Image (cartoon, rainbow, N blue to C red; front, side, top):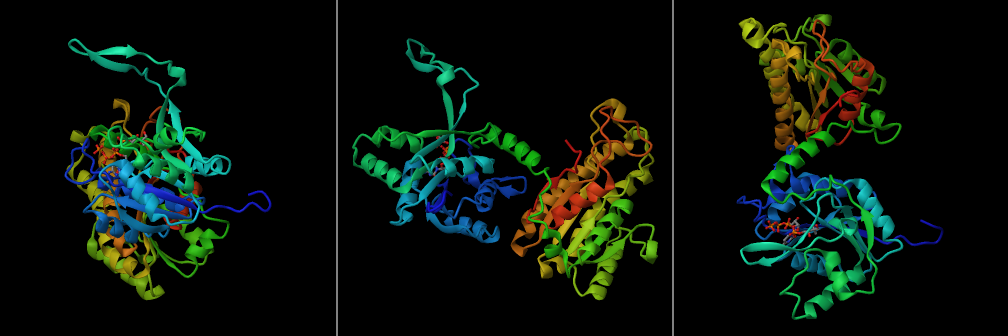
Length: 476
Ligand SMILES: Nc1ccn([C@@H]2O[C@H](COP(=O)(O)OP(=O)(O)OP(=O)(O)O)[C@@H](O)[C@H]2O)c(=O)n1
Ligand SMILES: C[C@](O)(CO)[C@H](O)COP(=O)(O)O
């Protein structure tokens, strides 16, 4: 802010008052889960983290406000001040939000709850633009040619093909000075013709009823999609999965020490990476217990055996008085190099037991400790990809399946344990399908160096994220 300039309060309004007719589910689409969290939770998380947003108001579909309040409490979305029942139309929901905002001037960003992939950059740009404009829209160029249709003798015909270079696809958030958007809505509600031709967005209301107010356009992004039809759920799911691969960045230079000092970390397996995590965490003041399969230090923990895992955690808790972080580093599978049907049956069972049953056993045994400390479970996958026949081996096929199971377990547990304040994430330990003894998958990616992987694990452990499947530095 320039010297002397007073910063206006910025309120984010998350519009979730719709019922999602086009989606066709029995519950509103903003409650559908993608990547382990409901769509509205993803959206609220973006607004919660945005430094420019001071408060949030949620408009929720009638009959679901209690559920929205639970989501807010459980996700610890501290910026949410009110959950208000939505109206019968989008504009009615906006009007209710404007009424709920009180008399003081502020900047308001109206955002579709079903645009969960809005980037922080777009929010920043809108808030910045509101310093000099009183109405702001977000839009992207249209990559499709758009036509204007008209009724024809036997169906529709084209009336016009507007110049595409001038056409934009409108997104949200849409930002306004509160007094401006209120004035536009008051005029709209006094217009008897408004109900017959309702606006499909809030800038449309300003354009129609306050035509002298210029509406500035901020560039949106293709990722900031609206989940409207069933196919959009699949696209959003993939985009969210890709976004969650980026490892969290530590919040400041002493973030690791603040998060780890005085805590207890239990690490299962992982050889070199496990030792490096232990060294780093110890350096930040944590008590660390490493449990390896081969039993260095006499531990000899077999993760496929629930009693062995429970005993290990009991020891850690007895010695250190608490367990705050549990890390499971997947072991190299033993199922062999041939095709799956040629693999030794016992080795197949062992691979599944170690890489799938192991994380399940660790999760079950960890919960009693982690719920006490509101701690963190970090699972891992090998991150294998068997994209070509040359890469396929019994190992690669099994690892693909156990990796998928661990990612699904991570997301399901993150959701199940969110109420308990326990975070669950997983990290991909390798960038390619290459393991000792396998042929290179061909793209020549080096394996991520163990120090980088260990650092990524620590960055995740000390962050607030939950339900993320994070890639290691070289994972595309
Ligand atoms: N009465 C309404 C209608 C819509 N919205 C919100 O506006 C956003 C964009 O609307 P849309 O995609 O049309 O959602 P729905 O109205 O739920 O969908 P549909 O039109 O298919 O019923 C959504 O986040 C939706 O919840 C709202 O707050 N109140
Ligand atoms: C506001 C909006 O998302 C901009 O594209 C869109 O107009 C909302 O329309 P909907 O029919 O309520 O989904």
